[in-house]
Image (tube, rainbow, N blue to C red):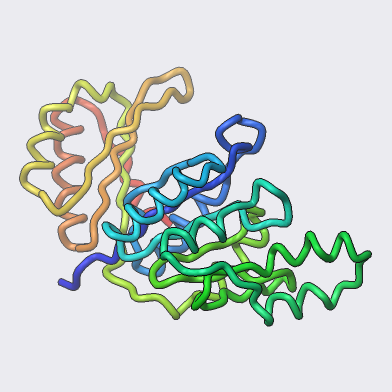
Length: 251
């Protein structure tokens, strides 16, 4: 089996940490990258602080195949992601002519244009990430991909990378619903997990129709092993006196 391709996501912005803005980018990134065979193994929400951003980038790019950042590449004083990436790679921050040309296509007063052109700054040697919305592009330095924080723009940038990134086996999910408390079959689940070390088995309690229950989710790259584990879990539920609902493979 081919080696997994992994990713870290860095969500940059004080507004996320304050609760003023709700992040939706992580969900989209994890879903799309997962479909491409890139497993998101870590996500961090970090502030607009130079040292924190630089250290997070350098640490993540060492341990993961890819790093994706969102936020902090706009025209204001707190948009410092580009300069932090330049510092992380120890290169100069330059104005990229292709981004600057795109920005200048929208006329604006001189002071406004000066602020807009801050979005044309990228680390020297960066490769551009297309922005199908028509706005300024994102950029990549080695395995670090820097994208906008605005969800619509981030999603457009990510779509332009389809087919351009290295991928590994796709992780699939199988789910079983059981109307019983998760503690009832906790020991059985532990034994099933030991037998299937390459799978990730999770238990997620819920309350529905005045009944407590548990959704049991199995994740892995081998469809046959997923089926075997699902069968073992359903047997454990039946042995506990309940009839499981096989929800099949998650879409």
